[in-house]
Length: 234
Image (cartoon, rainbow, N blue to C red; front, side, top):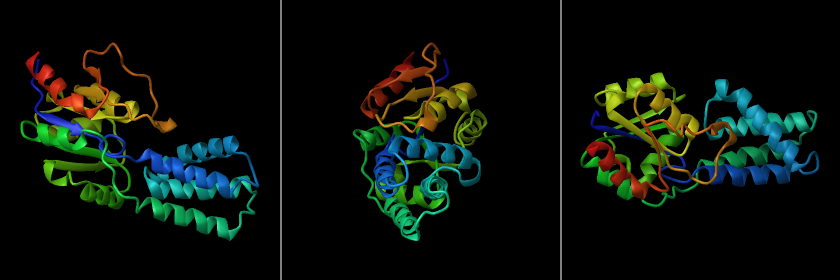
């Protein structure tokens, strides 16, 4: 078995909290539109808008805000007050200012593995926002490389792990999203490690490749160094 030399880390909801800020803003959104539709209908319409808009806006806060505005226009039949649009823009600006709160064991895991492996941050989202979060996290100096990509596909992982290592066969990716952080690196020939966060965006949901020999599930990043040691020693 090829020894692992490169470890990829997802950022949002793997190293630091992120989804909870989207949920808080969704609550704010539902309150603003309560006179026009119920929460369940509103959230379903918002999710539809997000799916439609991913190809144009990509991932991140800015696309989310635009999808909220689009949804507000739709559910009010183009009668949404300007004050509501202003509130949604303010909510998005608040999201871009939320402080970074590291998840348990994030600093320790990255620090421990950076001493023995190449560690690469691989994340999706808005470039400026992801750079801001990394700078505030205190983890930036530990990574050998940072890759902010528009989508996480097997080809993207193969290219990144070839550029920053010995190819996907000698690489492992860890993250909270089954769809983006686990399945694609396995398809590229590497390992995929799932560390559930608890809050999951519906668009990132997927069935786990439970029987695949290069799939692993851990409860927290605190288990990652021992898992890497087991993989390297097996």
